[in-house]
Image (tube, rainbow, N blue to C red):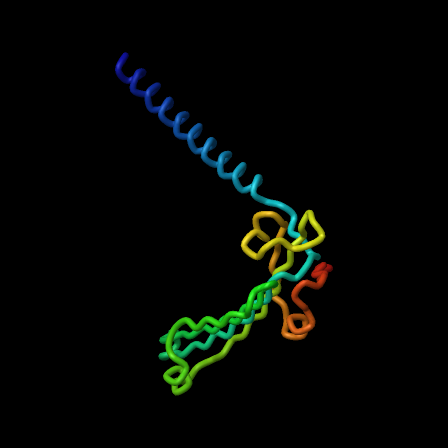
Length: 151
């Protein structure tokens, strides 16, 4: 009889310990995510624009091949063009679908001027927005933009 009581107490102690550990882990994760959350800025200086063209070829209903072209414009740097995936000639011979994405990056900095490109994300609050082509074309590097989303 004595062993049964001790065994029962031991199992309850294990369950309590497991719940304590689970609660501690959940609380830790909650704190980490809460500390990292900051309200997103909606206006600032445009410091980068990015245009992505994504071509996809299908085999049946599955994606068989993909190709991505990324054009990036950054304040005080020359524009860059990057190609990832299958070459253009081969991709153009396949049945495919093209998707295009336009993204504008803004920054709010403590000083009036933007710092060097590699220091912008360290020294300023930043945000990026997926935008339609018209807004992408009207956004100019170094100029103020407001992406206040009214719901």
